[in-house]
Length: 114
Length: 118
Image (cartoon, rainbow over all chains, first blue to last red):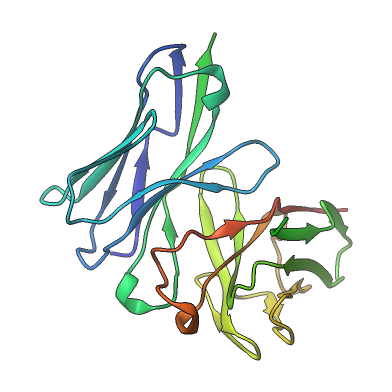
């Protein structure tokens, strides 16, 4: 129940395409869902995050779609660029636990071809 | 500039040896975390600390130890009891419970230490 399942494991798109990365969770007590972007040899950095009281959030070319009833959320990258090539992690946490602990998905390696 | 510094970037461990990974932050964060990253497994929590002189086990604490004597520092020791230590280790920090909302504050990560076995 503590797991977050992420798919696909890897993804290749052409420049300008819209890669979609999906995550699913079981525990309905999760109430905070961030996405992190990681470049090779670097630590992850927060990209965008959503709370379950909204169904969609956009920040620039990045959009999170959230389906509370299906317990799924996804990341869409509009007009993808070669510079977006990185590993993406979804995560979930309980704000109410006050620990800041994050449960991460397995990661998706994205390659955007020029 | 504020941030998290992890050192060394690469570390090699001999059999039976304990090694210590350094994590220092100047972000004034109370909470600090250690994660282990393996290919295809995401990030798994080893230990976390929400205040000086206090820390809690994460999901995979066996074979690891930590200390939190200073707010800025949260070193991780990989002991000889950890039989499969080869991984990428990441340290993170964020504001703690006494500093305002936690959980909706981003965790800031260092650039990691890659540990290998000799």
